[in-house]
Length: 273
Image 1 (tube, rainbow, N blue to C red):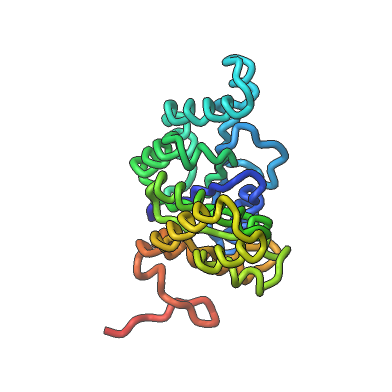
Image 2 (tube, helix red, strand yellow):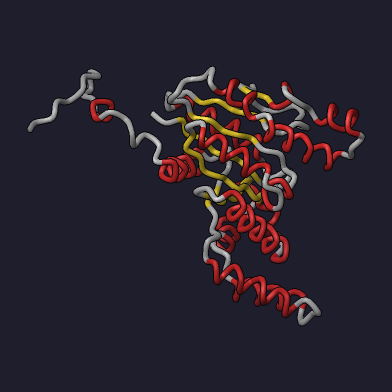
């Protein structure tokens, strides 16, 4: 099998580490050999045990102290440093099974996956190393409490989709915090509806034309939609895993005999020519 992996991105606080922890547990229940790779050099108190940790190569404290950088500059430096030292990551990953399933937990600094090319360089090297990857963009449900925040978050999703150039999935996290009716309004960005609700709330403003142009941009691309996720809902978690498996073509290269169903005693049924 080909090594498969999710590049998990999204704004700070969107639940990336919680998502990785929940998905690792779900995959373990399905008997997958699953590994979590922490790519956040500033991470603290992670909810999972790291199988590979960028902090073993470089940490935010190293960058800030040695390079005399601020927190944001230090984070950018660390990811750039990793992109220039990919042999370290490849050596770390080579210790695990060739048919492993990997979750790459990325930093929450927006510029890293929407403006700079470093994360794209890393994913390109991983692809060359034999990985089949998708990008998973997380946006937490508080973003849908305000239409302007939602438009901003959706533009970030679109930007990261174009920047990374991978098969892509957008996910609304923390869905247990809002009602289903609210979620249904925001799963698919609708420029006309968003603009109407903003005008109902704020009336005409100096930004009306700008909001209209941005809403039309989302409509024209038609590439942004969201799946629902909550680590408290097994159904939502399974729906997300099914969608990621489809994008990754996970399991498509299994041998035919590995796909044979089993009877009640655990014996494989034989096929008839």
